[in-house]
Image 1 (tube, protein in one colour):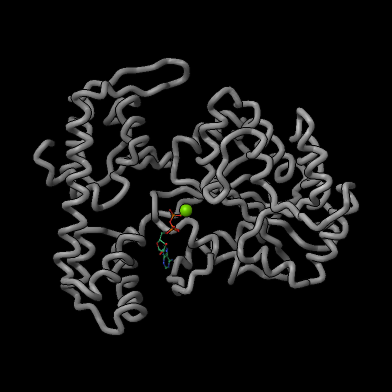
Image 2 (cartoon, rainbow, N blue to C red):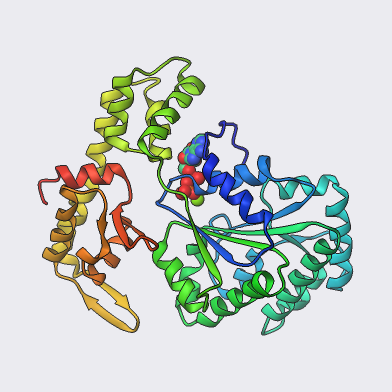
Length: 380
Ligand SMILES: Nc1ncnc2c1ncn2[C@@H]1O[C@H](COP(=O)(O)OP(=O)(O)O)[C@@H](O)[C@H]1O
Ligand SMILES: [Mg+2]
């Protein structure tokens, strides 16, 4: 996907990222933040425009675009099959691929636009008929990365939308997740062969991966949050210039912020819509829609017997506990997770109403719009 929209700011996050990859790889990084805060956009900007192409080669696996339905095709998702290749010996292929990548051929430009690791068709077919595929797959990746290191290039392995593998790893395949992350630990902490970044807005799943993958002391977190107010207002100026070819007044910007806060995607949508429509109408429409969704959620609660699974335990939640938890946000945007019982906040996170910051131990609505809906809903 080619994005012609210009990229805005995120200089602090970019600097942090560059600092991490300048060091020897030692930890797995989880990039987390609320939905639509700009995580994927940031990473794509970095790999396309900010990497020193003499030093780094990115391998980008986007689980969203790659329909993961079972363990077999999870392995498939890690790769781009080279249909033309006749090579079935993975060492031979890795050598020639690393040569190609180091030479700076046309091939390599694809990787800076976000491409997974190439794998030759005959080798791929061979391992695909085996019962245990991951051993060969890991061997191939390790060998390719070692070759690139020999030639002075550091691979950067990126998994976007990590939570898309949730279903297949929760349903009796904990071992798959465990072995993947043990392999990633070996690549980073033990062999220092590549950098690893896993991106997701599902912080519950990140915590689950952290525990299941035995990652204590082997993983770090990087937050890409919604924009703070000052930056959000600058983003509006930036978009106004790019999209509207005019300035937004201070009142207009304050108005936008009061509805959608620092959510990059929402701000962009509002500015685009205001090209043809009245700004206040656009904002009111978005808020009404959000209130509608929240009210629907609350009305359905009376019938749906909400439950969550914690460990092997299935826990039923009372409607009034959910209502009381949401009421806490009438006065505050961010609260400590200690103020809500775990089953209730886990349920609200799963419904994408709340966002958990696992580092701070705080909860907040997934967006300012949801926050405004909570404040205005007559059912709360
Ligand atoms: N730094 C940025 N500059 C310009 N647009 C941005 C920026 N960050 C986010 N956006 C806009 O917000 C949308 C959502 O961002 P995205 O990266 O998909 O969020 P996430 O991956 O966190 O869910 C993007 O499609 C883009 O239009
Ligand atoms: Mg994303």
